[in-house]
Length: 113
Image (cartoon, rainbow, N blue to C red):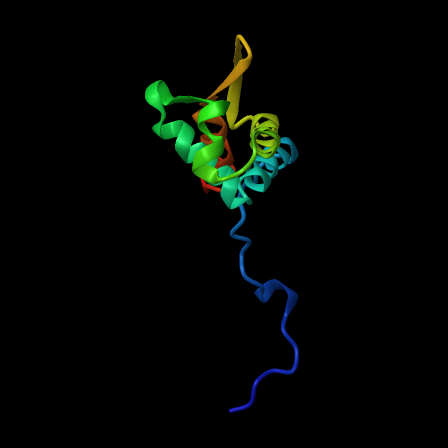
């Protein structure tokens, strides 16, 4: 038995892709995943989630990750820009809380419907 030398154009499989994330949703999700691409930022989110009331002061985040306040502030700025945390200024200290809906939306961009 020999195989055919050509494949008919109509014998191709039926496309399985029925919907995709919009360009805007994909860009938003990529910002979130990029922010999560650093282990320090993942640890910072974990620390905030474990904080009392689901929030943490910047002053409480430096020691656990072993970085300077300036470096932690930079990481927190990137997390805030990605929408993963909210920032509230209380006197001279910044407090951060998780914005779980942004992480959920990024995960939803990868789910099939």
